[in-house]
Length: 80
Image (cartoon, rainbow, N blue to C red):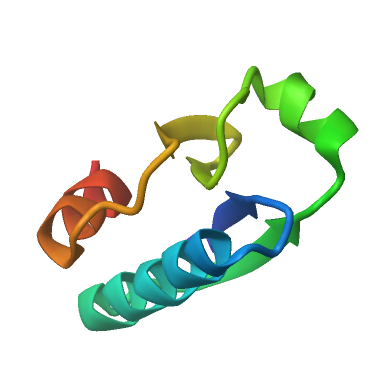
């Protein structure tokens, strides 16, 4: 099975950290084999087309931006 690449885009603010922790928890609950990268370089946000953080990308595709979804939504985003 391939390792899922999850990227958390944010400057390290409280919401960014909350999204990272919530995403980690959802991935663990789903039993995913994943690698998480925190992207803090604002220039890289633009590469993803993200204007509002926090944001989460899975395999390079932005799944959520500007908010922290609840656990159920995160699990859905990670499994789709």
